[in-house]
Image 1 (cartoon, rainbow, N blue to C red):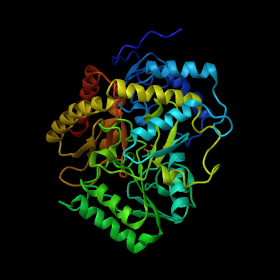
Image 2: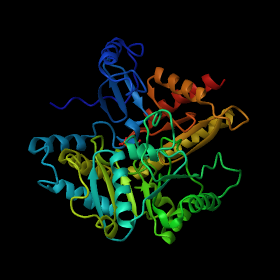
Image 3: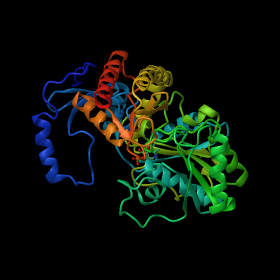
Image 4: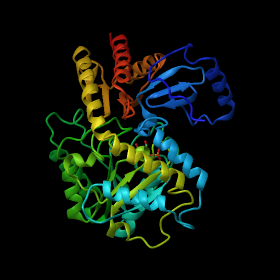
Length: 445
Ligand SMILES: Cc1ncc(COP(=O)(O)O)c(C=O)c1O
């Protein structure tokens, strides 16, 4: 029986957390490992669009979309139908044993959507980290080189290789070493924290100088970059940075891997963030929004690169699971049908206006940045660039107490980021932003 649609309205009916969530949290503390933590102690019973309903009946506005996953909205009807239909037909064969059409069709879509006119191929995996691992495997295999360059403030996952690629120690790397070798870190273009006026080209020169001095261009298999950094603080590089890095890769025989796991699938107002400056990477990693809430990830790239790996060199038991593929086909269709890239741009202009007017009133908001529906505020001690993680934490907590889910991020923990489902309606977004503004006013007063 389909459940009735959930009203797209914030509504708190108990204190937060309510009694049922508190009871679940008590059970959790004796059952779930401490290392797996949650932003809010509110247990979800159901969700739809941009509303989460907890086990006490509280309706919360979700401005995080499960970390940029449910761009098509929670329980998007076409995703739900596709999953129900597929799971009733078959839920697993292992594509490496018995293939099926859904996998092929998802790859066909990815090959069309990912930037670049050259023929492309894709391979499917389960998680973002697994996609990054495989992109690096492919790059090393086809170049015959070993060095991998990643950037300051980067986040690429929690497996051994992707921990090594991730720049932040706590909580991701602390005492989890030794880490995978042959990883080198270059400075990112971070306009708010770079010397004033530093252009993208100058920031790229700074990175290239370090790569050539420390690694040597001939040793670099690939340069891995998030076109807009996610966990690192929604850092948008200065214009010209990405194209200059891409050009350096081309002239040094290194592959450019764009990690579009957080930025991909309409989030930044285009299908992929690297389109903004016309950059065509050799390989693109995707996950998160790809399958509307089901676990699915991909590596997509030029055919001669992707096909450089021998048969059997890539894969995994669950990679490209048929239910996840059915969900992806429905999610991609929904993104086209509802023009969610445009929706992201509209959300972007509404939110940016609000955040910029808040910034005018509060010198503790050092920077407002982002693109499309991937937006953030960086908090600093007024009049300085000194990070203020306490402010970010206190503002996020005030939002949570009022029933609005916002997330923090950043190398310094001082950034609040907004990643609403792209189907959020205007009134709900306005209510969420009112709560956020109130929290900022209260904490920074
Ligand atoms: C840019 C980027 N790369 C990789 C990952 C890792 O993805 P997953 O958590 O699915 O392994 C993330 C997750 O937040 C991400 O934002």
